[in-house]
Image 1 (cartoon, rainbow, N blue to C red):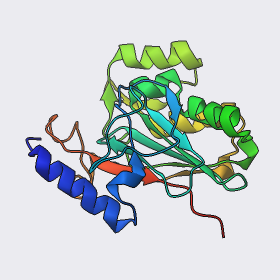
Image 2 (image 1 turned 135 degrees about the vertical axis):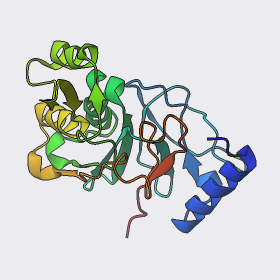
Image 3 (image 1 turned 120 degrees about the vertical axis):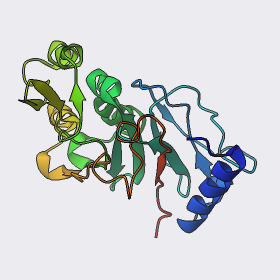
Amino acid sequence: MDDHLTNVRENRARFFQAIGLGTDQVVSVSQVHGTRVVYAAEASAGERPREPLGDADGLITDRPGLGLFLRFADCVPILAVDPARRVVGVAHGGWRGTVGGVAVELVRALAARFGSAPADLRLAIGPSIGPCCYVVGPEVRAAFADRWGPDGACGYESMGQWHLDLWEANRRQLRRVGVADEQIVVSGVCTACQVHDFFSHRAQGGRAGRFGVVVAPREAG
């Protein structure tokens, strides 16, 4: 997209305001389709969220009122909360992040930092490109099978093409680290099918904006 930077900043500020956060209460990262998950202790000072935590594709925090902000346009939003410890996390999983196990790294980061057990977590897999629209080449399918075994290349073949299911791939990986099925909600909403509601990098030919996802712990009480 060719949106002017001033308009992008204004739209973000309006979005944050609509969910009860100021721009000085939001933190983000530079997303790189990897698996690094970082802890956020405080937001950036200034009129807009900067990228103070470097290259990463996941954020966790225990700070009430601190918003964790990531951007999506077909990749999978993975949201996590531990209600007992009042901590949250969010991750960005395209095919590279998913094959690398970013959902698993999110669970591990919550365990390492806060002592969250998989049995205590509640996770959501948000709107992203679905298997109906996500056709990939044999090298992508092979990468999943090599990393996660024969059942790791989630999807189906149709008319000689492989349709990758990122929702199922992330769900299976979460199950491998002890998160039960009933603790995982999959939206099942395909961004490429519903470009009237969501941006889609693939459906819009690479000229797409991004929709934002923000999670924040609530104040106690």
